[in-house]
Image 1 (cartoon, rainbow, N blue to C red):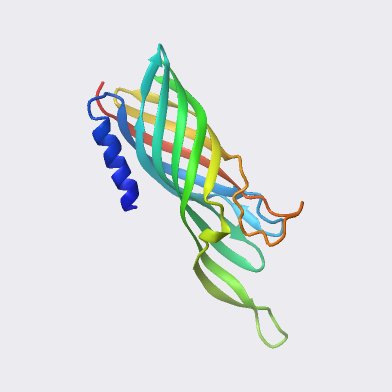
Image 2 (image 1 turned 90 degrees about the vertical axis):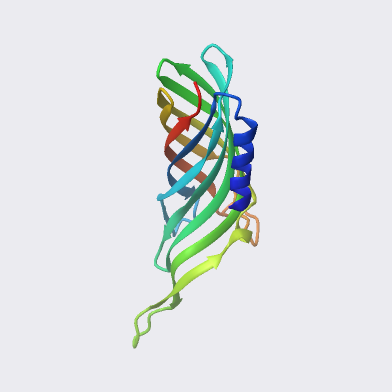
Length: 207
């Protein structure tokens, strides 16, 4: 987190003389698509926060890189487990943006680096017997080694700008399999990909 906020401060100082620098924050509805068939994966509400820089190219077209701290992951449920997977990413989307009046459209690639990963919840530790019910134990563990470090995605979204305030929504679809916990590679392996719906509010400094 210290490194993340240091990067934000560096971006702010480097862009202080320009009018297109801003900050943003919002909610994520995130899931890991491709979880094993016997496990139900559900969207989990998380958050993101970061900074943006909008560079005008020509007319309504601009390029907008962003630096975001994003909490993603999923909720997993089955007869054996019930826990949340929390994936902490540092994401760099680079978006082409078209602004028509107060409305803007945006799309482009996103590059993500996994900072840490954790599982929290309950898991079956002893199956039921004729004399005793099933026993579940608490789960709270670091699982960063189960996921690949890099994530590559495509983003698309739209929003409205009123003076210096931007309100928008975006969908991010992961392109690569981030599952690193495969003992044997095969056609039936779970291929996990990030899927994230985002809503956000941003404040753009200057004109």
